[in-house]
Length: 529
Ligand code: G4P
Image (tube, rainbow, N blue to C red):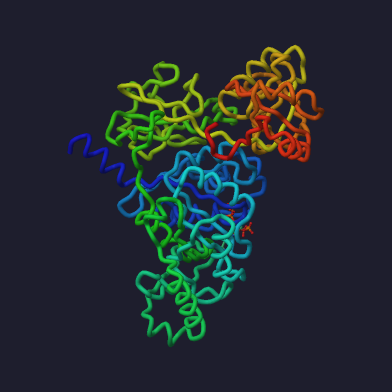
């Protein structure tokens, strides 16, 4: 096979996706069940009692610890049917961080897990907004149907109303939530009956039952399911690939990750519905063919907080070409060569060296200093992918070194961590490096910053919450007017944009209403301002 054919065929087999959900909806359980069904682990049911999982930067770290197996905390790669799945973790599931959002720029599709008792919850909504801004196709999983919950028709309505995606159920449950017997596959009309196994430790037996037998054996539950399907047929809520790929409709699956019901159908949907990697547009808007020279972009930089492995890994998503370990690669921004000898798949106690990889795959490059989030790496002729989207910070803080003799270390650390995208550092143009304000989408980012300043830069740091409620991008024409008003600070971001921080959302709203000529641009989640 020629190298071009090899790259195209490998890329076509990749499915690169993430799971988004509100904490406790079942993301970790579903991840584990994916591994069980894909044959990557032998028994399920080990994910429980997460204890202080909040402290971990990845929910998977806890899983790794409990199972004693090595799972990359950034990407899980496993084969399923004739595909290779790359499941990217949305880190800080329990506590938001910018990394969570950035991961979504590196996937081709998303599984949205909803708890049937709760429906759409705030965190799902926020993550979904980012998916929408990137037009990501979303597959929806109504989870925990083994427990009493809400009527699935009502949940479909909620999906449509709250997130504006047209739900198109691929399966429909037989039995009410709490009395879950199986699902009807809407394509075939067959009843797929599930049998429970203890804690979902092994694959749940599934039996395909003809509609006639189902009618006899399931009685009223069957009739009710048919009524529901009749309604869906009447409104034409059928799975539609084109609108799914455009991010307009979402195939819906009903199941229970805990008891394994419906897990296999989601995995099959990822193969059958989710897109393989497609050519990514470069900054000129030209789609880069998959078979072109190797190119990738960095979407996450992770410093290992384990003192035995004090290093830094830049994670890159491959967009084109074949990666061979040790190959010559440049960073488009700096035009400097980047070492690829230490390319790895896993981050954690055990790492696996990666020898080759294809579009859709994620590689971790160890100890490559000078790389930043959003950087493009390429072989051959230079190419640059668009900058990663920025996200509106929601929490703010001040930071100062606990030991004033460590100010130099503190300043150096802050600069590096700003470049890495750990937090956003906002500086007062009149005060130089003194008294910066830190901005983030979640508190966890501040905790990581303090930890790294202390342990990597030897500058123990005190971080205090700062009482700001909103941020807007402004400009030098508007800044003097804002300075006249109390409760507003004008600061500069590392990309030189001027931002205004408001102590009161109310004051901001009034200003926007009273003086519409002022430049006060919101930072839209996922926008590239
Ligand atoms: P998360 O990663 O989205 O935060 O959720 P996670 O998978 O950790 O699941 C949160 C809780 O919900 C866990 O219970 C888990 O067992 C339970 N769960 C997940 N999927 C299902 C399901 O399909 N049905 C039911 N009934 N429960 C489900 P826990 O009480 O926190 O822990 P555990 O001790 O029961 O494991």
